[in-house]
Length: 104
Image (cartoon, rainbow, N blue to C red):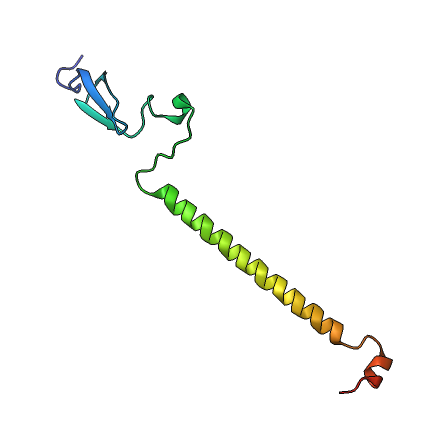
């Protein structure tokens, strides 16, 4: 094997999680920082948890809420337009006789 080509091995590298949990493993880095570990991961804890360090979940929820309100307002406008069209249709004469006898 060639000498001096392999990285330095740290048998007691410390892993620190954002939840406060820490443990040691063997690694080529002396200290490792992670966002999720087995103590706080939803798969192991059984609790739903959003892990979001960049604000992507809040951004998505905000866009979703805006889309829902936009959709509701569009449906209200469409319904209002249909109601107005129905009123106009009721006011129109149905037959030629109604049109002639109708007073303007």
